[in-house]
Length: 276
Ligand SMILES: Nc1ncnc2c1ncn2[C@@H]1O[C@H](COP(=O)(O)OP(=O)(O)OP(=O)(O)O)[C@@H](O)[C@H]1O
Ligand SMILES: [Mg+2]
Image (cartoon, rainbow, N blue to C red):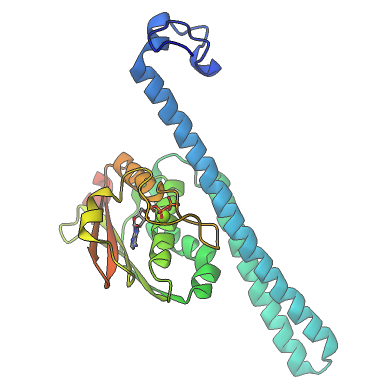
């Protein structure tokens, strides 16, 4: 085993020991921490894209099954009424399929990790397209209250979508018997922030657990559920890191047995404040 004080750098990742790196940089713990943080961010972004792709593939497959079934129905039944019905169902399903692929493409290219003026309402509706089937399966009703006049915020759409998916899945998992999730988007009363609230009617969080929920690896779940989600304890830690990096705030309000709300505030740009 290598001594911690060794100046031998052979145990460091090769990209850290660049030809340009001086000996001081290589052993500088701050430099190493920054490097590892960047690597972790990349890994998290890839994992999020992977999760999104797998959710979307399920959704897509479901839509294809609808199309195939109605096409069969149309072939079997030769009367106009049945054929009209089959064709309109096929059209509806195809439009949904197009929406699903558009969402994935947006995640993969347009909506980069970079910070740009972002319409949070459209991030909310894209996220719901992806979770529609899952929410129906677990008998979760989704209510949205999206104020129409909310200005764009400077944000990474990808990262905000990741936050939203994490919170919606946590909400869903807190309601094994089904329930309601409310998503509210509005400008704060002082006009300085955009507020996004995700409220569930689930189990709630015990008071003594509240200080820990944003800690990395804190989880009360035994492992992934049958949809392959949860149990890592990184979801809320990632949400907090993302919101912090947007100079925003995320906080929680919870009542045991009644439900939980996560409240996110993102600062409005000066332009948006001036316009409003
Ligand atoms: N909406 C909620 N209702 C009740 N408890 C919650 C809710 N959201 C989070 N929690 C609690 O906080 C813990 C941490 O949540 P977090 O999302 O970080 O991890 P996880 O859901 O357990 O795993 P994963 O990282 O895979 O999402 C959960 O295990 C759960 O105990
Ligand atoms: Mg979670």
